[in-house]
Image (cartoon, rainbow, N blue to C red; front, side, top):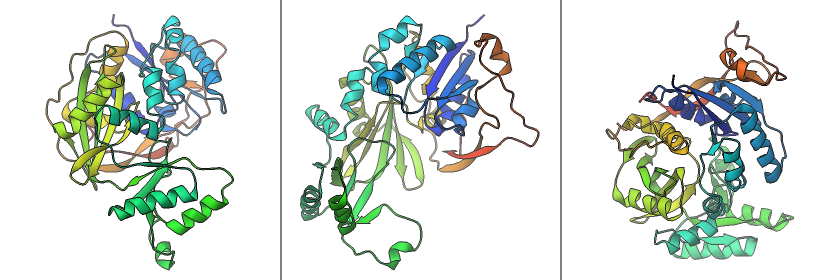
Length: 384
């Protein structure tokens, strides 16, 4: 009888319900049970999991590591895919191994390099991968100097937090004055320089921003899978140009990504993003975790989540080469269930493995499940 694999995802993005789908539809037909934890009780990831818990809030990284070790031991977790406090967890890899859990995460040193975008750009430049001009800004005067220098070279300036993810805090600087036209239509990322300067001068603490030219499309996100021995097993680009999405193996994008993934030891799954600076592809960002859109590679016949779990378990999935480059596609909103009852909950057929003191509640679905709207690819064959 094939043994089941127990996988835990902590406070991950809602789109990783598709990551979970791919684990369950693995080509070997191996049983997979998924544990999920989150701070939001309405995360669709909790509803999609076999067992789920709410996470305690405001834990320090050290305290969170203790919480995670306890989860792994109590839940019999074989593979832990950490997002929250990834670096702190990765630094305790041996302790997790001691309770029988493999971490699907790069070494802590690799995670630390990319936590700060300025430090990351400096390290990437040393490896010979092109980056755009960039400036670290902490106050109004530094922002003015950076914007003026970029504008003098014919660029539009933008800024974002030096530490952050998911495009949070990204703004494009404009010189136009604020007018009623800015109140029509939907909010945009454009912000008037004078308004930003006023806010900075009134702020009680300095900011920590990365200022750079606004880069052009296409945006290419290269999903990489790297074995613990440092060898790249997969590198496939996902292209984005407006609404249109597609795939590429163009060396202009893929080779720099492979160089970064190998050079920094980005073991397991990472996502390396590029955009155009003039005629040159330059690095935009590096995520040391699985991308939310990773499941879209199923259109190329790839199941990267399952291959990563195999590597974490010490198994060899071989090299992942696209059976085809899938058709261009777009992304639309869809429906996904959220939990109709309070946590904790677990699937009836895994109750026997639970700790006796944990409460077990079955969802009441007489009126139909509550649904959340999440984005996914319109052409979404997740079984490969």
